[in-house]
Length: 213
Image (tube, rainbow, N blue to C red; front, top):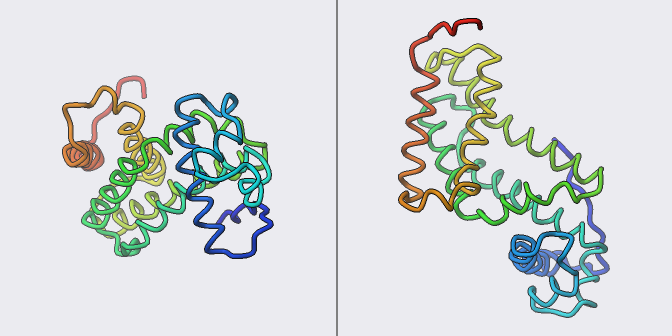
């Protein structure tokens, strides 16, 4: 498990730190989406969060810290929602529930996902490496589920197919955030139902030979 990146704060009250940083995240996400990371100032983030620039710097040191917090909030929420499930059960029912939890999260945090992928390149190298490692860890949750389903005989997939399928499951859900503008005729419930159907049919479908493969 990737070690959580520490962001320095002069405040010692952990509950207050969490509250203030949640306010920063909400304000920053709107600004980053509208103006971009580089054109947004820390003063604007402080104003959007509802406190002074001086208070802002009691909880973070740089603007990059705020972007890091945005990225990390996604991973924390993914873990929190998938922790509700028994990922060791290894059944298609659990896989379907995991997809529902993950895709619902994307609906709830559409702006955060868009900002993370558009602006994470602005993070310092060590923080970017952390973000990429967390991406792999999130994908590994689905890889583990698929491996359990294969071991129980509910899916027939090779190890390479499992790895590729786990990335596919992970990225397909993010389409809801990136292509939302083109999917106005769909509810999140319809999106989840159809995507789950397509994905499971694809993994359980008839094996075919692709010419040249």
